[in-house]
Length: 161
Image (tube, rainbow, N blue to C red; front, side):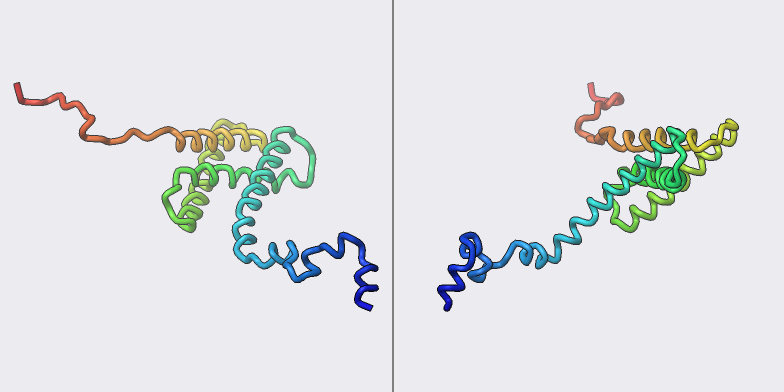
């Protein structure tokens, strides 16, 4: 009877590792608890970049869409916050989040004040000025910092002859 059951199985089913007690790949992947937590952050960051990019593209192209306003608003707040967080690499996560969101609000208020003073407020101009400001902030964080090395400094006021 057992031989009849084994002969009834196809060739690939007989050699399958799960038939002989090995773990299936699905059980191995789902048993890892740490992998889900570490994979969520890069996926969420990628989704945020995509939403901000679509918001900027919709606002700059004047395309009529129901998603234009929320995505553009997300771009206006997330882009300066991400640029400012590059300056705050040494801080812990909570402090970096609070400071970058506060700085993003300050950048947006300064941009709104500048656009109001120039009397050119529009969604296109807002997205454009915030994008340029965020780009300048981000690129300024990537400039190599000058090292203060006292042994390399030339002293102009030496009294020795």
